Image (tube, rainbow, N blue to C red; front, side, top):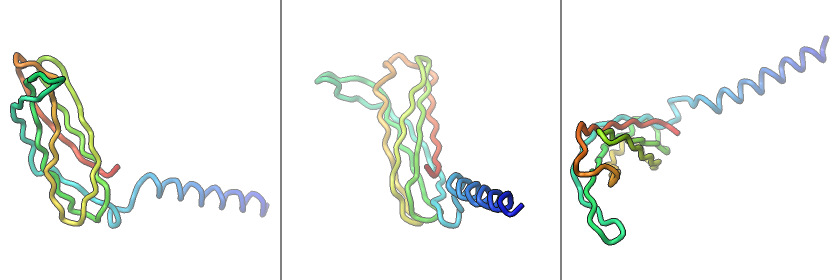
Length: 121
């Protein structure tokens, strides 16, 4: 009987460690919020040639503890969807404006929408 109890105790400790690794305690992790998402037409130079597209400016604020925050931005158009992802370090209450470039859509694209999300990695 003691062997079974020891194995169950060991299993419980390992399971707890795995759960702790998957779900960080918010008191010790960064917590982000998106303050704004701005889409603007932009001309990029690709292989020495001008190429019309869009830049997306995402304003992110960390309202939690210092740490890395992952920001994902998606640009949707009549020609398709594209996603860009970036991870950055943030201090407590720090606000950063991140720029994401999308030279992918053509000048004829319509129904252009940009969305962003942030999370702890």
